[in-house]
Amino acid sequence: MTAIGEVLAYMPVKGKAPDLARTFRRVARILPEGGVFAFDLPVAGRPAMNYRSWQEGLDWALMIEVAEDAGAQRLYRDIVVFRKVGKGWRRSAARHVLQVPSRNSVVTALREAGFRVRTAEGYGEWPLAARRTAFLARKRD
Image 1 (cartoon, helix red, strand yellow):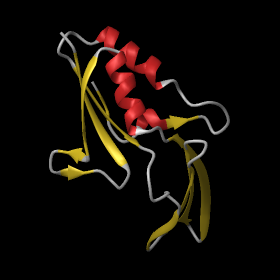
Image 2 (cartoon, one colour):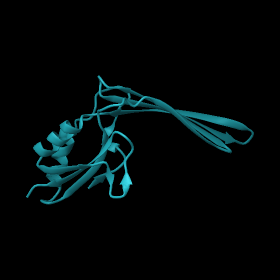
Image 3 (cartoon, one colour):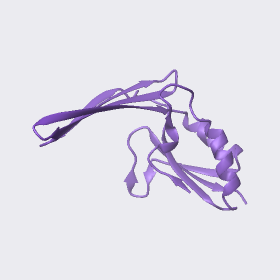
Image 4 (cartoon, helix red, strand yellow):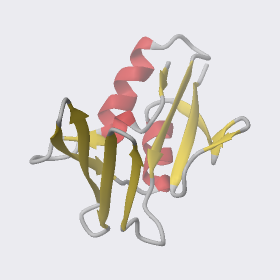
């Protein structure tokens, strides 16, 4: 089972973070012995993830502002996209909120759910972005 691209980190804009330990227990129940669960998450650490970025093409522009609240273990991504439509431009915006747990808390929760765990900074030859960790968990026999 895989959950690539930090999908387990996403949470409601307002509300509490999903319970990762509960998710891990549910995954352990459905995986056969020796089954593998691979996923990645942004993890707590330094430096803080606070930056702005933009990209543009002939008929589009994308702007992203990232702000981390380390105390709340949250990462906020505000994304604005402009697309040329006919003679005008269309603007759309979205806010993504992600939980940013500690690496050790994720490893502990996986072990308590019945997994052996390895962590990595990427998948094979494909590195993850800074402060992201891949978790490779195998259900114990």
